[in-house]
Amino acid sequence: MNMVTITSRRFMRRLEGPTVAPYVFAIFTLIPPAVWVNIYQDGTATSPAIYVPMLLVAVGTGAFFGHRMGLKAQIKFQENLKAYFEQDERLHSDPPQEEDENSTKN
Image 1 (spheres, helix red, strand yellow):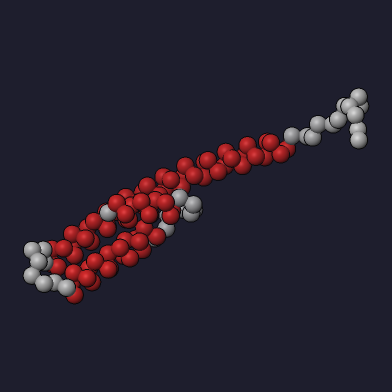
Image 2 (cartoon, rainbow, N blue to C red):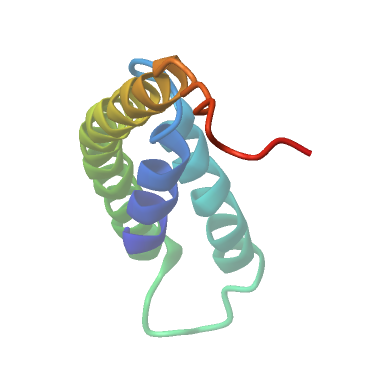
């Protein structure tokens, strides 16, 4: 859950608007262990019938909360980016200062 949440939040930060990326990350996180436990089920205490749904709930909640956190991170990133560009615009829009006539010119 935590891995899907963190990757979703970090990936979505620079995008604009909602995306399906967290759910794609969840699928890519779910498939390898689910396949592995179904192939190599050798009398372990946890059967695939219990393990796979538990894994599905974990990556599903990770994707859900990662999507929500990603949307919040997008808003904060866009606000910070807008403030940076406004500051940069102010710095570059100041008129250049003319040299004083009394200064030495080489």
